[in-house]
Image 1: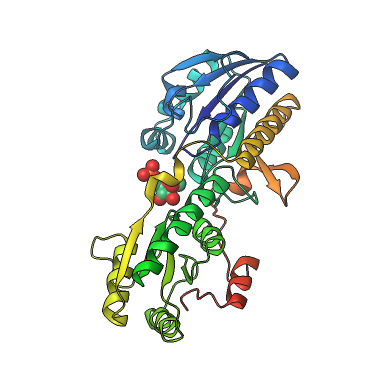
Image 2 (image 1 turned 135 degrees about the vertical axis):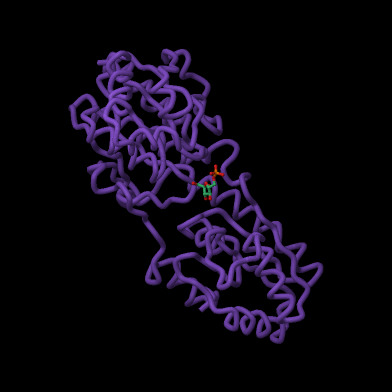
Length: 341
Ligand code: F6P
């Protein structure tokens, strides 16, 4: 068999471990030919490829980013949506000309939807979920998430000493457009006092009361962790949510407040050991699916040690979000952490 691998959407730590997991398993266990497709789905269309060998896949396990390149794919999605059949046929022709038996697509929600659409076009595809946001529906965890939580937790840890020295409130904004998983897990691990998530909303009065109460009880400083995707009533005036909350908190409490926006650092650098292993396991499972001709599925992790797969159809257009009754939220509340409401 001959398979192609591509990565699409925002990068995250662990993609290279996954490419290696797919490629080495395909070559060494099943004797398949493997090609890497560059810069996402547009690389498929333009047949921008390179051959992957056991040797070329060595030394990439610990590397951040993706050796194949990635893209946000607006143009490719336009083609898939186009009423003109001949546009979509170009995709099928490219797949045929590359003599592929299956295409492995590594990506987040958007990528899994596109992968499903390719399956609907009649191509053999397998999806592997990746994102630091951990919001892909149909899997309990995606690689990239744990690495991002490690980085975000380290950042919160470092804010404690400067917050304490100056007796300030520190607001830290973490990634997560729709889902607050990074903020929830890093906020809990870093001992944040207030955790604000897009899924749960907030009430400014509650936040102000919590911070005033902490100060009154002799606690010199406070940490507020906020997810970038939180919806601010009336808008942020073009600012980051962290800037908005820092200004409002200072105005309403009188406590000196500073903000930090961690940004792309959360997506960069070497994957954590657990993300390396997760990518390796997911890559291997994708190849098993291909060998057994079980196409149109996405690799999925259930619990802490069960690797399985789900139909792409079930995954497309859905998000996995934090819920009010999640164990981390419930335990946070028991500890006295405020979730802003
Ligand atoms: O998908 C992960 C993510 O990191 C989001 O949390 C963030 O909003 C988004 O990517 C931004 O990525 P880009 O600027 O690459 O579109």
